[in-house]
Picture 1 (cartoon, rainbow, N blue to C red):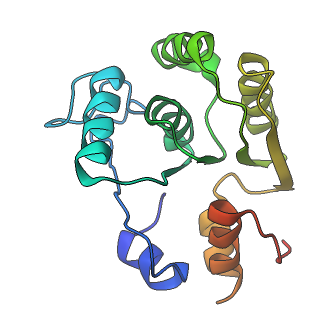
Picture 2 (cartoon, helix red, strand yellow; picture 1 turned 30 degrees about the vertical axis):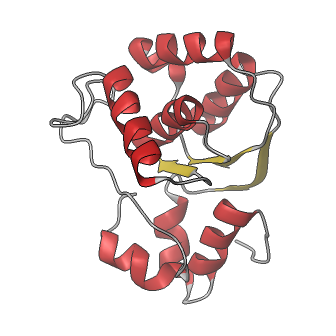
Length: 180
């Protein structure tokens, strides 16, 4: 998220949610998993699916920014997330292992529901969304707005007190009532 977890929780405005924050200490876009949960993205996804099932969660949403954007997509598909949101996901063609994992997911996916994406006007971010759309042509991917900044969370955090919780509300509920 590129921001402290306590900051996210304090300003998100979300009170009736359980959160699981993941950190990639390997800085490999989660392709090498997370120590203690799995050594590959596949093992990590399995561990998270087991956790979700054990806890009895029925409505799952994934969100990832930047390096976590593709992981949000991959894990969201694997665990059957109701909503998958990405902010400035990296390009699939830069991450062959992630790309292969997603290709396999795409081949077996029956998902038809919405993915939300936020992209900056930077060519790299625009290309990233195009590559995801190419991989999942049957899924509606809404890019509701473009910003000039790659990290929309930090941008919205710095704008004012209200933009950040409104952005989070859009990511989890689809209601957009803010402007950049």
